[in-house]
Length: 506
Image (cartoon, rainbow, N blue to C red; front, top):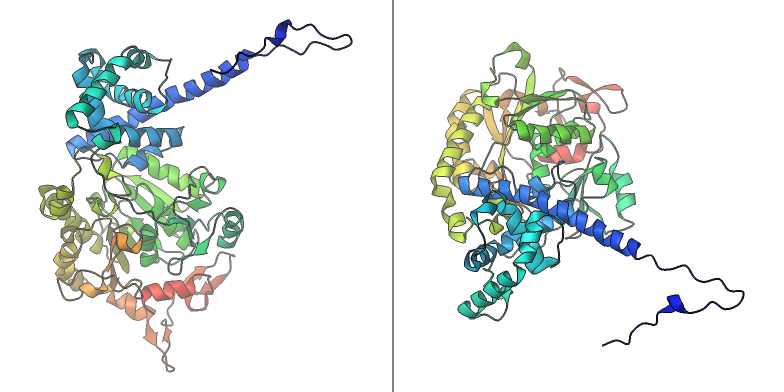
C-alpha cells in the first residue's frame, strides 16, 4: 500500500510566503462527469443503431450497413458509437446468455433491450463504471450477479476466459485506405500536399483522382473529409462511375443513387457541367443522398424521391439522357466484410456459400433484370453501366446474359471497361470477357461492372483517321471546359483524358 500523502493544507505558511491555493477537486469531478455524459449519449446512439441493425438482420431487410448507419449525419459521437456497436454485436450471444441465466432480466426492460445489451457490454467488458441513467443503474445494481453468471458459463464450457467463449469470426485482412479527391472543390495535388505531411500517399494507377493510404488510416474526422474535399470511397466503387465516363454537358441518370458517392463522383467527372437526375425510392436513404450532394458542392444534381422503374423512358423530358448508371439493390455479398456482416446473428459461412441460389437472391435478380431492361429502353442513351457489390453469378453474369437479346435489338453491345484489369466476368456466355469483377484478393471489395455502349455512339467516338488514330466524327458536340472556354471534345485537354481513353479501350 502506498504511504499516505501528507496533508499540506494544514502546514503553516512561512513568513513572507503566501499559502498555495487549495486544490479544486471539482475540476477532476467535472472531467469525470463530462466523460460519463459523453459515454451516456454514446450508449444511446449505439443502441439506436443496434436496434436498426438487429431488426434488419432478423427481417432480412437491411436498413443499411453498420458503417453507413453509424456514419450517418444523425450520429454525433461516431467513433465511440461504432466501437460500442461492433463490440456489443461481438459479445451479444454471451450477453444474452448472461442476462437470461442471471434471472434478473425482467420484461420491464424489453422495450430497451438494445440499450441493455450495449450498457451490459460497456460495464461488464468495457469501462466497468456507469452512474447515470436508469439502465446503467440497473446493470450496476446487478453487476455482481451478472459476473457470477458469466463465471458459471465459463466453467460449464470449460474455458478459462471470456474470449474463449467468442465464436471464431471472419478474419479481415487489412486493406489500403482509398480516398477520392473531390475535384469540384479542390485538386489532387493540393490534397497530396496536405496528407503527405502525415501519411504515405500514392496515386492510384487506374482511377483518376484516387489516392491510396496505408491500411488502418482513420480519416473520418479529417477536415478534408468533413469539408467534402475528399470522399472515403473504395477503389472498386469508384471504378463504376469512371467506367460510365460521362462527358461534361451530358444529361445523366443515376437510377438507384443513395448514399450518393457514385452520384457526386459522376458530377466531378463531368466537371460540374450538364445535369444528373439522382433517383432514390427510400425517403430515409434519400436524406443521406441529399446530404452527400450538399457536402460535395455539386450544383448539377437533381434528387428525385421515387422509383426509377416508374419513369417513362419515352417522356420528352428524358429524351436527352445520354448515360445511365444502374447500381440496383443487391445482396451486398461482395462487401459483407466491409459491412461487418460477420458480426450479425444470422451470419454463417454456409449462408455465404449457398446464397447464390437462395430465394432472396432469385428475387433480387428478377428486380435487377427488370431495372436493366428499363434502363436500356431510354432512346438517347449511349452508355449504360450495370454494377453490383455482389459476388453471385445470379446477380451478375446471369442478369447481363438475360438482357443481351434486348440490348442487341436496341443497338447496344458490351464494351470493355478498364481493359488492363485482369479479372473479368465468369466465362458462362460468349462476351463475358468484357465484364469486370473485383475481388478481396485484389485488396478491394467484390464488385461487378458491365458496360453497354450503343453501337452508333461507339462509331461516333471511334472513327479511324487516315493515320490510324481514333478520331470523332465532324459532328462532335461541343462542351465547356472547367475554365469556361468552349472547345470541341476532340481538342479538350483534361488531366484525366489518358485515363478515360484507357477506360473506353481507345
